[in-house]
Length: 198
View 1 (tube, one colour):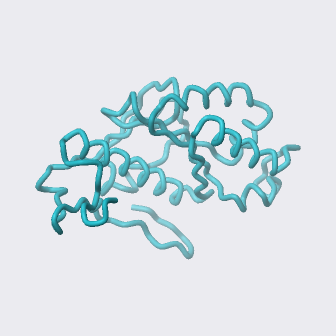
View 2 (cartoon, rainbow, N blue to C red; view 1 turned 135 degrees about the horizontal axis):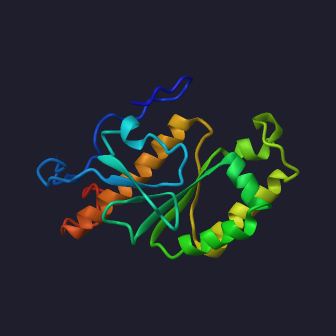
């Protein structure tokens, strides 16, 4: 489970709610938890299953050409790219061409996102306080991310420098995409809660 220190609300320990006619069908429909496929190049992958066994069924290491995370069964549909604050700064200038080429590949997936392990406040506050030596202006980083979202249609998800919060956000994103996909594949419709259509 998440061991957040600080003023944060702990993540949910229950499964997702999938409601039909006022009843949770997680068990009756035998909705599985997703197995996350983690790129072998990830040096310190998020502890998705360890922190969120209620949402994530397991993890396996595989070589991914695009992105850092996908889900078993959804390899051709979904990718999540992870970027630390230092990565985003470096990708703005030093590794820009390589990053843009990766974004071009990422854009081909129906469901994709770049999850930044920083808040907008972290970026706009400058990088010296995080011991990231850089001449890159914070506005250049923000502008690059906005341009990537506008050009490639890749959502940029700002999370937190707190590892547990970033892990929670990734686990929630992955589990929801998987559940919607699984429900649709099984003929249950692309809806979590039938009452409100979400």
